[in-house]
Image 1 (cartoon, rainbow, N blue to C red):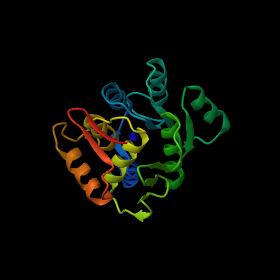
Image 2: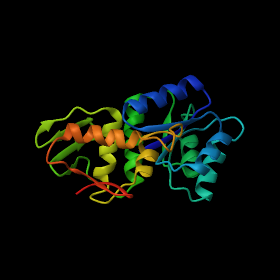
Image 3: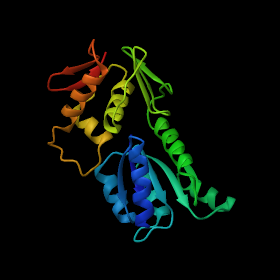
Amino acid sequence: MRVLVVEDEELMAEAVAEGLRQEAIAVDVAYDGAAALEKLSVNAYDVMILDRDLPRVHGDEVCRQVVAQGLDVRVLMLTVSVTVAERVAGLSLGADDYLPKPFAFAELVARVRALGRRARPATPPVLERAGIRLDPHHRETYRDGRYVSLSRREFAVLEELLRAEGAVVSAETLLEKVWDENMDPFTTIVRVTISGLRRKLGEPQPIETVTAVGYRIR
């Protein structure tokens, strides 16, 4: 999953971003509405966490433009506003969910994951294939009943491969979904991460390389 955090309070934005990265979620950050619209124009996001009261371009206008442009991103709107009327107004702009500040981080993560599931074709909460069992909620992975300890990036790459249900996933897609916009597109990090995954998952090897196309788990 790839998330855009749009929040003008830089400390909060970075804290939310780092917390989500700890959950194996790729995160980009924008500190105002204009920067958010620019990032939305060049990157594909599953979820946008959008503060409503933003400088340059107001959060309401960012939400309106997302809807007007038909962008395939779910919007979780944040605000200090707590009245029912204000929440209804935010949702009527096209937001998919609404969370008042202050909020519990665990609830934020749960809402982001729920919106991320809605941004994709329905998949079971626990992913299983080729003897692999991956539980995104509890961050646990097993291979043939054996617990496998994975890094955040390894876990996220494996989750993307399992969600593809046997289809090939390109290195470019993995780079886009698992890493953030600061990653060099010519890096070998995907290949290195796949190599680490293969070593930890063991034999018989579940991850197949499709030459010049990508990777898949049959």
